[in-house]
Image (cartoon, rainbow, N blue to C red; front, top):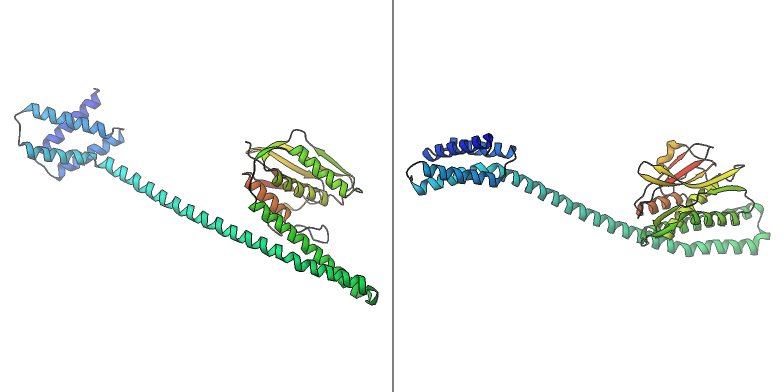
Length: 340
């Protein structure tokens, strides 16, 4: 036994002996302080128990047996008080743990309630958007019939009104389709499998070029862009990002679109870069909101839902998405996908 350990044992025996001779609050206070100091020095309950057992044996061997019953009660009280700092520490831990468990239960219940509300809202939005398509087709169809059957009887202003009506119906139909697509992104089951993003990007670009053969756009897609994710949802990401890049470079001579990979602070990041219209970074916070547009509809068509779809898909995969741009200097959209 080291000197400090020997001193500790001597002190405990002396304090216990004093309490056996004259039991009182002063002795219990000394027991408590002994236990508190022992706990600070890294001793445990078993160490105190060993000291107590040894002290009792030394006191018993030091002289004639005293009043056994009274001494055992006093010794037990002294021992219990020396352990009270440990008990209080354990009680505090238990109370803190119970509090954390209660907070966790509340958080779990709140999360479940939010998820249920979101599911109901998504189902409602899907139902409303789906049901709107039928009357919209009627508006467009009857407008077309009116123009075809009675167009010659209408003056130029009336025909122009009908044309605006049909264009508005077409725009609304596209808006409904985009809303339904956004709803499917949220509701669809997420599948994870190896993806060839290079091939996926090239396929989208080939389709854009086929649908717009008059455009001359330089496209560069890096080799070996691979990830793990849902093929259908990730195709929606490239449909929207590359579709935007194609659209916003439509007025750029020498248009260029690049798909590649770079290193972000939290790991590899994929990007879609163009040299088109760009946007003011002061409004970047609005980019991924539903119906948010940074360009007038008269400049570039669109519903303002594409980037919201991109963000939801990337978030569902556990990644993040952000953008860098400047007015008339193009834009770059980055996104990460956790590997594995």
